[in-house]
Length: 92
Image: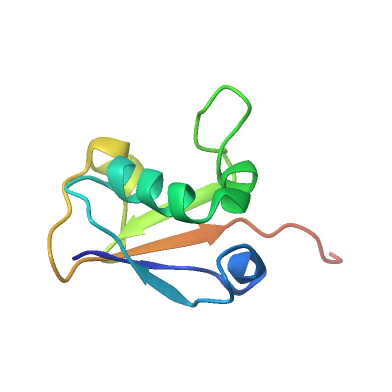
């Protein structure tokens, strides 16, 4: 099964789990399985109209899915899907 890595700021919405195994053949299916099991994550990952938020970056085995087939990117047993929210702020 593919495994989704949950970033620290979102773990409070995933039962404090750092990673979750999902049954999926694509990134989209994996994320759908994740938010079905942990519905509180949905508002942090998706817009009201069901699109992945622009500040949420998703990587499959260290490759940005936006440069692959986006949510249609195939995944298989042993793959790691990482959710990386953008972080803004700081002082110049």
